[in-house]
Amino acid sequence: MKRKILQTMLILASTIVVTACSTIPRVDGDVKQQNYVKIEKRIPLKEIHDLIAQAGEDAGWRITKFKENALIAEKFDGDESKAITIDFSTTSFHLTPQDNELESIIEEKLNH
Image (cartoon, rainbow, N blue to C red; front, top):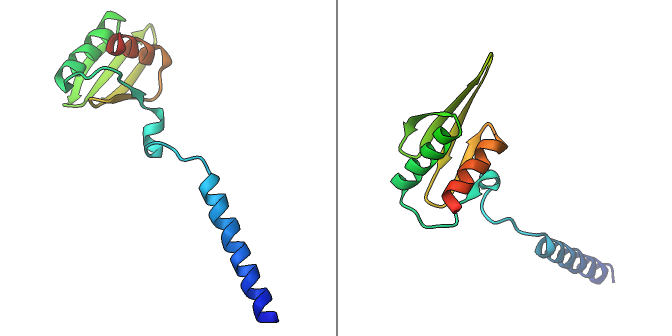
């Protein structure tokens, strides 16, 4: 009798675990990708590079090429300065540290 109760409890516990795991929402992509802004259009990497540089320069940022898929944006305002790394691919881009103003400018340029 004890063995039947133990088997029943084990089956019940397994069912609960399987059910709980299957109802947890899944995340698309890995955690690193969560702060990336999606690029809606299909644009070659070189063109994305040029569009990001143009958008930043038009908004008063100094843009420096860092790597094939990364730029550094710098902005000086009196005694204050900002330096932001822009990583990008053909599907998304990401700013480190985050800057909502620059992100919006780049997103507008790439997606419209």
